Amino acid sequence: MSDRKPLVILGAGGHAKVLLSLVTSAGFDVLGVCDPVLADQIGGRWRGVPILGGDAALDAMDPEAIELVNGIGQLVGGTGRIKIFQRLKVRGYRFPVLVHPSAWVDGTADLHEGVQVLAGAIIQADVVVGANSIINTRAGIDHDCCLGEDVYVAPGATLCGDVRVHNRAFIASGATVIQGMTIGEGVVVGAGAVVVRNLEARQILLGFAGRKKAVWRDD
Image 1 (cartoon, rainbow, N blue to C red):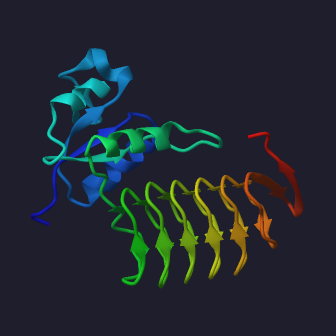
Image 2: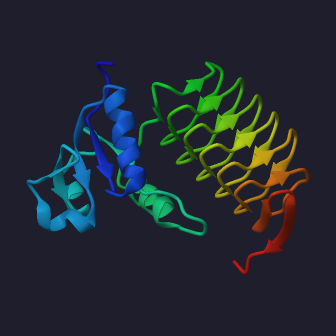
């Protein structure tokens, strides 16, 4: 515990609230929060932690002395979370792996930089999760799954064993991916969908109440 660095949370929206709960529950020291919408409230407090200002507040901080929490949530097609991670990595900042105390992560799992595992999530044996990915509340990632970078697994989603998920895929709430499937780069799996075949890059699978269809995104 003694080698932990104080944290600065980036963003003050819903995902940032959840992460503040995580890091305080896990015993981290939170130095403060940075968000452009709070730039005129420097010296105040956000949910009990100091407001440091907007993005410019980081300019006065030594990247070796702190670590950052990416509190920007992930929406379908959104790039803000990815861009801020990449931009600040280039500047020398680091993002710790964060695991909620109520989550369960097998000791053989490999979680890369900036991965966030939220309350009640389960990550089983020999799973790999790429950098800046989110495993959200009560999501389940079973044995031998391999997730790329910037992957989002929403609350209650389930990946059965040996699933491959490529970079920037978005798996929405309550979706299920059966064993051995491959999810291509940038794929969106809709809420409640059941994936029973491989999905190629940038495909969207929509499904609820047993109805499923696939379409292609323009990008």
